[in-house]
Length: 85
Image 1 (cartoon, rainbow, N blue to C red):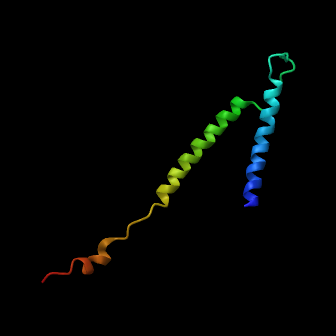
Image 2 (image 1 turned 135 degrees about the vertical axis):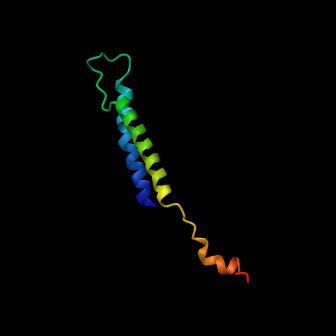
Image 3 (image 1 turned 180 degrees about the vertical axis):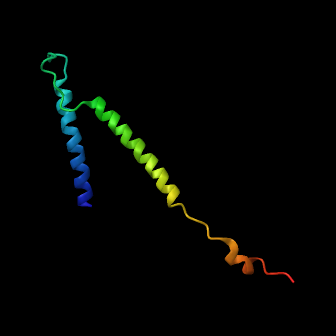
């Protein structure tokens, strides 16, 4: 449980710290020469959406590959439908 909490906290700090730093330096009072963001958030958003789309498509294919297969009915023929005659 601690490991999972550490991973989540680390991810939040990794993304949150540059976001806060960028939002503090991109105020209107800063000149255009002083505006230098750490992260290009437009590119990050595009790549995030591409990752989400790729993951959803991959999960869809995985579900198709691991879908439960119904056993053939031939082994139940004698039990369910006894031979007539």
